[in-house]
Length: 325
Image 1 (cartoon, helix red, strand yellow):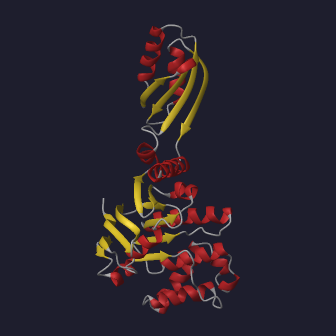
Image 2 (tube, helix red, strand yellow):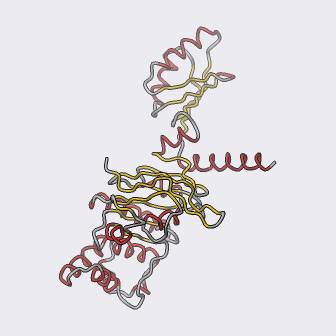
């Protein structure tokens, strides 16, 4: 796969403070990648280095094969950037603002007019094209911002906290719009956010970013393996009717025949924890019954980003307390 964004040992230091600490990350063409971390983690600083708007203290950053530090103008031609707060001319209409951006990018009036109308329709602002931006809601401004970054036909779009201050319905619509546009145009998307659920909804891969460091990256399944559990699914079962060791052996034998079962732990009072690489709840129920045991309880636990995020911070906090004591 083609690497569109490549960060190698990227570091940004202000005096003794490291805003970004030895960050290495690759993002492939066509990915929707989520950079997830709390406010102050260094996400925005990383984005500024990708755009050539601030120089790294050390390390390298390439975007679309271009060195962002040495070729910042060329990078900006290929990248659309939607900052946390989008600036528009409030007394101009949405159409006029977008038309102005198209002209700034060297497009002829004929092309600019056509593209402006097309993009406003694509982001759902067609009926509001002639309305002054001062009358736009926060969600409408973000939609206009998305159209604005698409005017120059970028290969990559970088979105920094794009849903901030938008109501839940507007968030859902904006996220769906981002996914649809990325697929239609074959775009690579980097979404920076501290909202776990939103990132989990649309991103193909996620990087967890804490105190300037990337602690893990991958899809949710692989993140759970790295940070929480060896297995992304945990099936909890309680069984009865097992009196002798031989029954336990038979139960394990039946469960081990279920594809995806990776680990079986027999706990006290007939409680079983079964680690799986995929959801095999119904097959596990059948295997328990086939072993001759009575199934009295069955539940499934999957690890989402919320579990991963919270578990990591619990570990970090306890580690820091231990270190300081």
